[in-house]
Length: 456
Ligand code: AMX
Image (cartoon, rainbow, N blue to C red; front, top):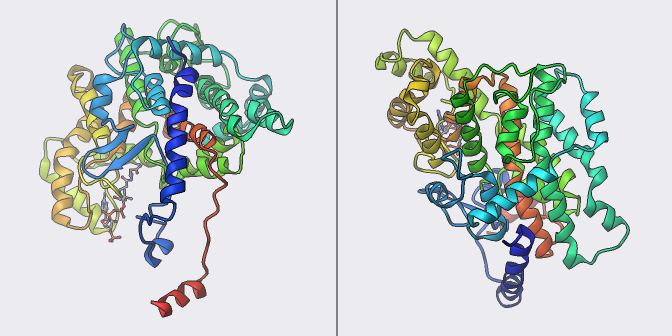
């Protein structure tokens, strides 16, 4: 079977030619207007980034190399033995090469990552063990990743002047795969820092997939470690692993303009290596307007449950939602800047719960999450402000993790960060393949903008 690198090498010449032709023949074609609202409004609607792996369709949601979430679920390989969800490793292959991997290709990438990720560099271990255990887990992740820049092949070889520009992608790919592979150990290390005085909660194995290692190192699988504090049955552990595969498989990327993806791309455009670039992306993911929404939803559901007498009382739920809206607050987990339909990633997470009715029958937070998906859109429609009254992905994800025992709400975003590495780092490899330049938009001051109004 071809390795990921070989499969990538096969598609590079065609893509390089296409980009060269586009630049040479159509370089002056207009992509769209840029308005003052866009300049002052977070560059909304401003089509000015090149991003290959995913695109966001207002009707169908995110598409991964043209495939919807549902198509990915039907077509991307899983382990073949213990799960109904595709492997994020399969998704990485799809993003990187543009093609669906065979079962063997997915299995070989799974193995390759498991081997690459078996050890954290000693200096990273040292840095992580020195951090206060109450330090924000995303700060710990960003520090851990940035420290790994010391071992970056790209940075080392670039400094030695050993590589030509068109070859930069090879070390960028090496670093990116090493970074992605290191995330189970990094994540486990951070979770043990915040919950277990830094003592390991589980063991790493080269024989299992990336998500099984993440779950094991979070202490969520049975029998892997004597200090394991997890109370899950083996079926629950397996379900949790599949939840992890589902979650990390569909959060990999959401076009290029979101803060974590854009930051990685921007920092990477200065030829910073993948560790520094993605560490910066993680800093952005830590923002409350970006990666923290899932945690807001968990708080919201718990609070609502303590304020209503029963989930069966629809009117009470409606009244509660109206109280929030009337006090000018938003209903977390609903609405979207681009999507105009229920988020298919939400639907996938909801189906995960629906397939396991007995598991969730007594979890009033998960039941409320499901009930809200019926009620909240009606209320938001009546309210009439939100352009999209439907649930987004964050409506369901956090509360499912919470159900299985991940109670440290700030930690959810670290799991998000594991997943999100795949999309932006794929793009970084492609940035190098295509030799994209440093990003440098022109900025304008107030007087500059005012001058434009006189000209028009
Ligand atoms: N509850 C109440 N009001 C809402 C709403 C919601 N869930 N979603 C949008 N609105 C309101 C907006 O606040 C805005 O009101 P305003 O005119 O008084 O400012 C109006 O509806 C129009 O907003 P919009 O164009 O539909 O949305 P947007 O593109 O400005 O913002 C988003 C999108 C996600 C920030 C917004 O829907 C929101 O705040 N949702 C709740 C928080 C949330 O779920 N965040 C996670 C988003 C998923 C993600 O990207 N990670």
